[in-house]
Length: 312
Ligand code: UD2
Image (cartoon, rainbow, N blue to C red; front, side, top):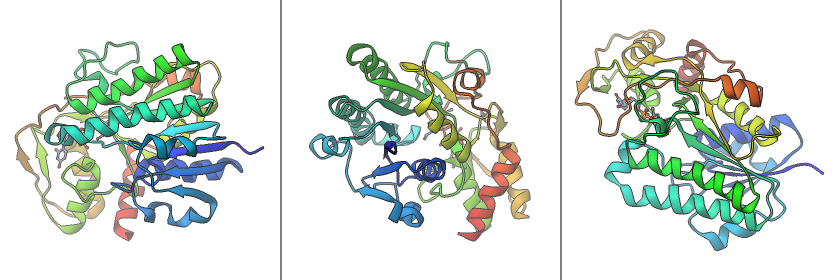
């Protein structure tokens, strides 16, 4: 029997990369659940005949619950991301990321799903005295978004210990790559930088640009998420999903300008509320327990991503 997978947020930028990865691995059976709030049918257009798609909102428990029947693994990626959006629009952000996530665990448990793999966030760490950030550090969320994502981890661990549902949380570290939508001020910074460079516009950098991120290529994340569905002995645990590198915004804007062949000095604005200063993943636990090593350097990831934006 082929494995039945369900991907919430499967029409999103990361979710659709996971869907393609799943279809490339085995003759699994993939159901996508997405309310198309930020996900796009265009992201799954090329595979639409090989998947089952449901335009369903994870806040709607009654609609969500039957979709889990017969599913073995749920990948829960549906969310309203963005630290600043969770500050300017805290209600929808809380509702989807907390209540929606609870619905996903509850429905998975009711339907006797074997395992839920949850897209957590590196923002849970907040500012730490030490880098890289290891999973044993005390979380210090600095924004509603960071707190909401942390709650989803804790719910996974409790569904594991109280209800016997297998649950694995992966803290995504600033994922980038093709299909990341640059269409909103809340979009991931690299998508905004790529768009700015291609349009000859100057981007805004919040703060001095010396804050750093562990930018992680989307295909590496998809590969890790898949491994987390099948690795034995990891239920109830949290793992970093990062590349292990650390690059400042000034550095990556420089790289993007070089790829585009432009020179456009950025505008510098005030630092963003809730922003973490530095972020870098310790990847040892994911390597040890999930047998995962990132395959894409930042240079390779940026090149592939830029090529995609240029063609899109
Ligand atoms: C956080 C998480 C990340 C993921 C993401 C989802 C951290 C360290 N990372 O990403 O893992 O969960 O949330 O949304 O918390 N910036 C500019 N100019 C812009 C846009 C952003 O300078 O036009 C800066 C921003 O202030 C920040 C950096 O770029 O310092 C990255 O911002 P982002 O929104 O791409 O992602 P971030 O780090 O909030």
